[in-house]
Image (cartoon, rainbow, N blue to C red; front, side):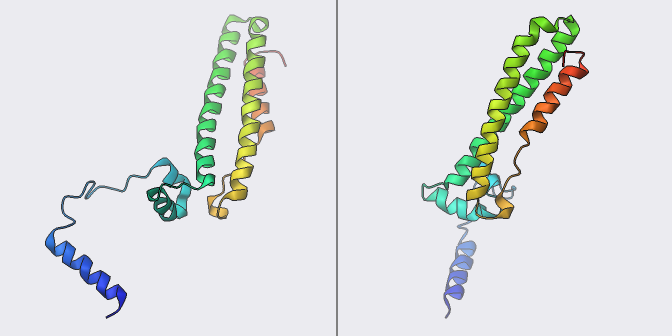
Length: 154
């Protein structure tokens, strides 16, 4: 008897004995952790490594990038809010320093994220696992355009 048939018969016996009844999550969709989502097609390999207490460095870096992108979005919202307040008050000079600081923070974090994305893509196990890099200059142009659209100085 082949190994596959032996394993299959043991699984069938366990099913008949009720070994798989009332398992947690039975009948519900699989819930994926953030790292498993980042692993995409490599989720099974990730799961095996995770169960063994190991996580590939590229997956840890991927999670770090996701958290940085959330921080970048928060800085973007802060910039949007400052532009709205400055436009409403019509006091751009009063908010110029704060806007400059926000843009500097944004640029610094965006450039750091881009470097991490390049490292991630270099170490990811395949094209499907890679993440597109952000275009820092395009993002900065968008912030400056927001100021201009709100009536602020160039």
